[in-house]
Length: 383
Ligand code: PMP
Image (cartoon, rainbow, N blue to C red; front, side):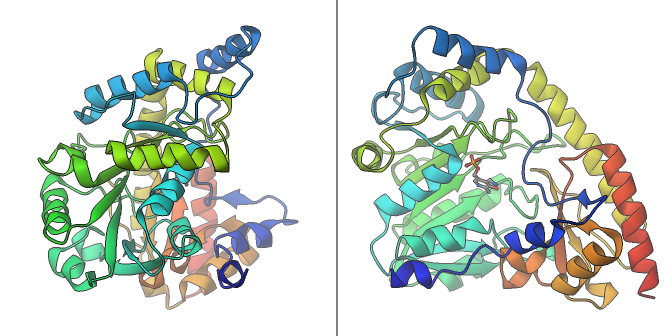
């Protein structure tokens, strides 16, 4: 269709493609945990298959999983959702985002996102015949929305604000005051908020995660998108959840029948175990990310032409390369060719990402140190 033909391929893929065929590559582009899925979760899927759970499930997912999600949100996010009609199991957070946009937007409606933001937002919004409208977020403001920036993006066609906290690619975590400001503006302009919290477990330094649906009046206009992918090292299982008002969730259930019928059944049983079983693996992985974050940030800030903020969450550093005099593309392509280190150019995430590259620290300490020895060599050659 002309709509699909008009959509640009994700720019980030270019770096993966260019890295193919090179030897001894260090990659900082991976957007997923390098850890294996914890064994007790894998066992739960095996047991489910042995017990014959290999058939279709209800469109909204199996009830025990919806109940586990409900209990988890009550406990962690401090919000109440009825497992019978306010929770939908989706194919990762990605299908949750897609279904939210499909159910909420009419052709031409505008969806507000930060710039930079998760690359897939642009394509997903466009696929749904809606229009992404960007709000620049600045390093000086911790890459958070400001009231002035958000207000400037609102038009009569605005339908929803897509908020991702902790953020991919910047690692920003919206504090309570920022979330309250966003909620106020959403209520004032009768907008939905799609609240993408797939990195919510990956918050360091006691930063208090705050779910926007806790604010009185917001539950009615919020769709929460979450998944087990990042927290439990389960990216390949493809299990996520949407929580929202009954009229929105019931529309999602209706169209899931025409789209996928349901999420992979054994994977749904594995997700119950992830949410309700032992949480030690999660604690261990978080400690590892925290350690790696510090090592990476220290290495960056010890190089005089590079700098970064200490990211508050997720597993990404958004590194400022402006003083090298190179564009994001020149930096990423030069580094790949010269030193076989792969990073994501910041402009993959929006025009405001120019002057930055994104690095993932979901990789071993050895890789971080070896990668930064090479980055140092590359940068020194530019002098
Ligand atoms: N939201 C953000 C911000 C992401 O970075 C990702 C994955 N990279 C997702 C949603 C979707 O993840 P999944 O479908 O694996 O849950």
